[in-house]
Amino acid sequence: MLSKAEAKYIQSLSQKKFRQQENLFVAEGLKIIAEALNNPFAKVKKVFAMEDWVRANEKFRSRTEIVTVTEADLNRISQLKTPHGVLALIEIPRSEGFELNTLKLALALDGIQDPGNMGTILRIADWFGVKQIICSNDCADIYNSKVVQASMGSIFRTEVFYTNLAGWLTTQKNTIIYGAALDGIPLRSYKNIQQGVLISGNEGNGIRTEVMQHISQKITIERFGEAESLNAAVATGIILAQIV
Image (cartoon, rainbow, N blue to C red; front, top):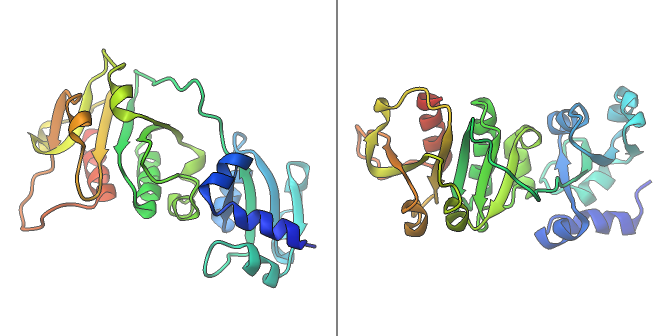
């Protein structure tokens, strides 16, 4: 049974300030909830699901609290236009003490503000085995429901750290910093980059000047047509497909 107070509480988590205050975010859908429940590092605090899902997933009662709700209940608390039968409250991982793994390639995002792009980039990074993402403070919140949905579960396998990106880059003295830019070395010249940080810039403006000055090597995706630019997530995927 879902009380009015609990419904209101869950609805409040659609706002970033309440997610930060409660240290919880909402995830929805069969695949994403399955990913969370099967990931030992994801702390699922509570699941709200319709009866069919509950019956099929009794094994997870030992891990988290499961509440059976009606379709009407899900409609009240879902952040989606069409609820997917199950919703969970999941603890936001603490990011204090972030340390860059200098033996691997990491991704840095400068002003990626579109939630769909952010979620897709998480998914792309996961696909190519990039486990760490450093975000400027004005990037979309990865615990926004649209980002969570677009990540398709990759949010549980990727370490994300928000910071003043330009300031953080000044501390990376011995790290090669790559950046997507229009005036760089053609992408085809790069092969098998295993270490360093790759920066992708804002959807409309690219990488900011104060961030660009820290880049060691600029990478350009060769253009053969007339398109003015590439979607940030698409560009990130193209570059990773070539260099990883």
